[in-house]
Length: 172
Image (cartoon, rainbow, N blue to C red):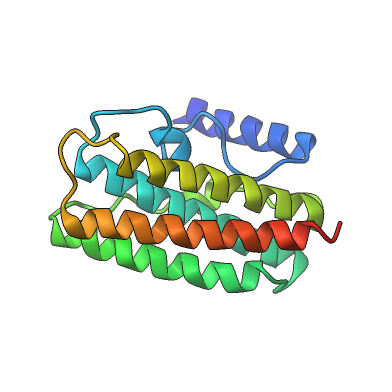
């Protein structure tokens, strides 16, 4: 556990020094954990999905704690809350235990608002790629209709969030 905590702290520091987003690199969770994997079960995909939503929510709260309730973070964080609720409902429906939400300990607020917006762009790009992979063949078996529909809806939401972040970033 000490080694993992050390890796997370070092990764966070490297990201801060690089002036990039807030996620701990190398962790097997969320979009970075799902990246490139195939043959995933519904339980694995739903777990990666809710972890990624936990991470986005935690990152956006950390940014708001540092910079105030600035848009688009103040709007998007509410959407992330809903996404977590929706995914938790699907996990419950399928009898899958929701993973612990440890995201708050894995994020670091970027140094300035421009970097925060860049982090939002990168987070949403990774999120879209994850849902796209889930919808296009990362699953070991065909997705249940409600799971497929949820992933499609969450992908669309991330595309909207990406647009909001890019529009705000264009001001810099």
